[in-house]
Length: 258
Image 1 (cartoon, rainbow, N blue to C red):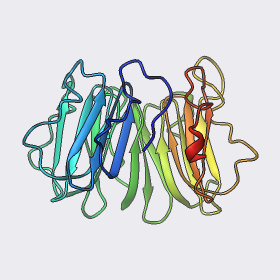
Image 2: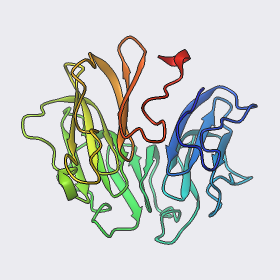
Image 3: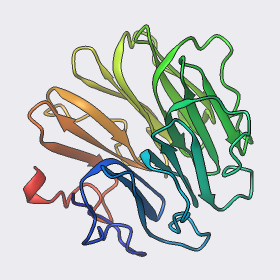
């Protein structure tokens, strides 16, 4: 595994003894990974204990990192969070049902429950915890800094929370999708034609071309949105990134993974 870009607090310095990884999440200034043996490792900024993995953490299958907190999904379907808890983002509801996936925003956390419903907790300043009542069955989701986007079992996209720049407004005519992601001030999806579509910030200080999909991108299988950039996995297995690149986020992709 390789990490690159801005590295103020060692968030891009992968631990030398890290084994095979099954899940990884990077947000703000820290990174966490779940290994095949169920052990979670975190590195980077630790001002709020976000990289101090609890000693009694059960074997995990997935991780999620927020602004200054981290969460892990156990192989049994339970959720555990640690780090900053200013808005209750690490206080997992005691009645949380069996969980199949997790995601984290700046100061909130969401769980995809067995059965396809979504439950969120933490900061609700921008209504990011208010899961739409008519959302339907969710099969995949992603938390941005202040908003959440989900892909339903029907292949449709839905977003809620902070709507500035239109990042929570799914474009009309988007059609069915195979993947969705939420970034800082934008959102992106992969269509059934294996094409990327992004919406949100297009002008002003928050726009760095992250919603303008490169014409030469070609077919893709996955996309991940950062604060002001995107990275995709092409059908060829190669990585392509675009958007803000003043810290090497999009221009210094390691040659070994191109």
